[in-house]
Length: 411
Image 1 (tube, rainbow, N blue to C red):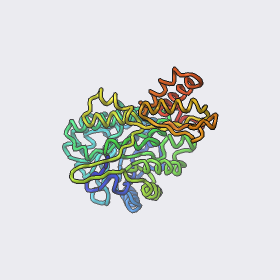
Image 2: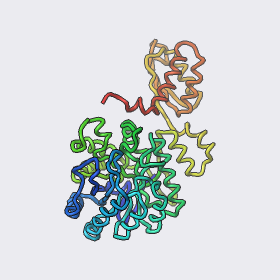
Image 3: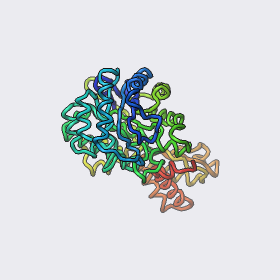
Image 4: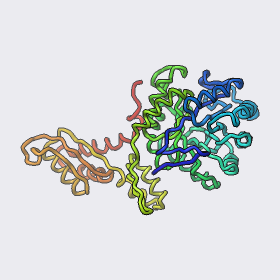
């Protein structure tokens, strides 16, 4: 679960500084108008970003904003992009990334000296894109996509999409150590409401199981507006708050319009990010895993070669939960303790409850998801309030996976 990648000589990963990707926007259709750069000032803009800490410059000529009008042709995109690349080539001390979904544009850009490709369609818009990436041996950013850019809704769908992208890239012969993953924060399709971006940001650490460099592109996006109700020009502080969270949860590259401000936030958030426990010796490795979601356990086991059936059977044994049940009778608490012990879990309650010196008590119940579900099933048939407590245990476990419950509130 350790990431240590070499992206055209730039070290990216868990033991390296979080890298800043500065955005140079050549698209007049962009949702954030102040980010649009005139061709005459592009070199100055790039130098300012590098001086402020950007290690990568991401240059794009087509707005991927869902409401962008007009939708430009590939010819127009190329006419905007190629002259800018000629200006930047060999004149900027940073990697040059080209934001495009089209293979022929990517090929021209790489021939002009671009170092890497940033494809928000996850190689889906143009089936030649992976061929170009493989032919040039270049790194690439791939964003979670099934059919159109950013269309997976919910973290499970994003994880599945990125898994398929890795499989497809590997099948085409790409060196996937050069693949950078983007979970598609933003309103890429109409159905994607802000709570799904909140889920991505909150659960960003789930992406670590891919063992690839992780890119977060949050800069001034609509999920910030959903909280602050401010135009893009006034979303900097909100963006920086979200950026600190994803860095703390494992992001390796931050794509931003605001390099100096982002650099400060990234340095502080990264300093407070703990290391993943890994011990290596004599060719062996032991690493501590902390699954929060069942499908992550399944994906990890499948990647190890565990059968699909085996992974499904064992997934509920991979996640441990502690539930606090409050204000129950001592008798109910002792029954719960007995039943969870019988299933391999454990429980803690106050000393006076064990000796029946108090009538009511709280209890901590500890076990895997499977043990807790079996406990609830057993309590369904018991007397007193235990059938109600059984239902409440199952409701609490289900709410942990309910996106609307976790993130939908008055903003």
